[in-house]
Image (cartoon, rainbow, N blue to C red; front, side, top):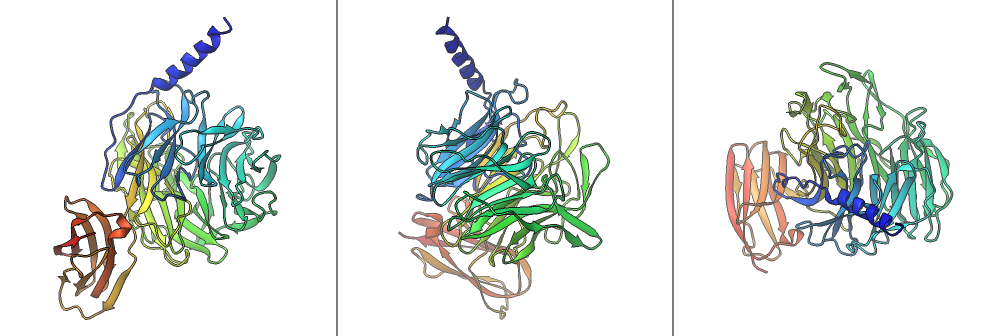
Length: 548
């Protein structure tokens, strides 16, 4: 009997894992690939922001993504909830996936890199967090690092420059004061209290920078609600006493505060921290039900020691942003994610725009989120007008995640991972709202309008010139004229009409412009390519030939 019982337990575990109902493939748009990750529940992953996406620093074509998922639609809340991961070795064109550990139900993961290898934190409700590390990037050989102190849930983690691991979370005691522990390669340090930060699920960000710098960021959940950070200069062995980042922003007669529902995420440029976070004024429940909330002046803000507070997004640059949404635990602008290269800061976030709704199972009309993206060329002082990179009316996207840091001057196109939710809302098995397929989507997003050179204002008429040289390898110059201020797009397509890059996507002043297009930025093969200019009512298309 002693031998039979473990076998029965193993069969039961495997049956739970294999009792998955694979949904039909998701609808995809240009630049999107399904990672193979899906869930039939848990469309809401965490309060605030996630870090579910990493890139191999030794091979920029290799990625790893994760998802908290329940793949058995008959299961109750928390049962059969596992962490799934997927690898790509070909720039996101194809993916292979697996489950992290199906011996127990896990929740609320976070992912980072340690010495270039993915590490994942997740928790079991009654015991706290565990940390898993793969054998190498793409090895599908995750194993648990033992000894994490008990009692820390909703953990976030980072690998440091000397390959320590810093883990941050909070106990499940309704007070949620932050606490951290550091792994030095042999053992975990005792938990230390972080009284200035705290809160449940997603209310932290922990990141590492150059020269042994580590930052822990969060809001003071139980006291003043302000945003603070703790700094370490010895790879997380010790931390200072904490520093205030943001208390409030006066906007006319309104006062805007940071909030855990909106989310926050940090990253480092060298040893300088940058953070993006959601802020808004007080909320009010309004018609038609208890899930409908009005938010006052929601914004995404940015902070660094050099710039102070700057504004990333709000109604000032998204005019059709809604103030009132019917959903749970989200705000009109929320869940920001941050990527930093040597010259660009990029930010994605969930956005609710007016009129983008969906009717769900009980007849309720819910708001459906979209993913918007923007970037800064001056270290966060100013930000470009955000663009909608999903644009799927009636279908929801949320929980976007960017690669933390990228080697080089620019990651073009921007690599983004997010969830596509076929039934809008942030519920987990709530009666009346039903269950729906949720998919992990990878996208190459063409948001950058960098390298457009303004020649002069002497444009007599609309004109798109033939590129020169032509044929070319690897670079060629495209010149165009617009005689009046119009919203203008300049796009590159392959011979089958698939958009490769949208170089220009904004209102331009009258004048002559040119752009140097490099095929090497997109790993293009020899062939015929098309470029198209649209400015107001004017449109023209030309062909160019790449010979390698």
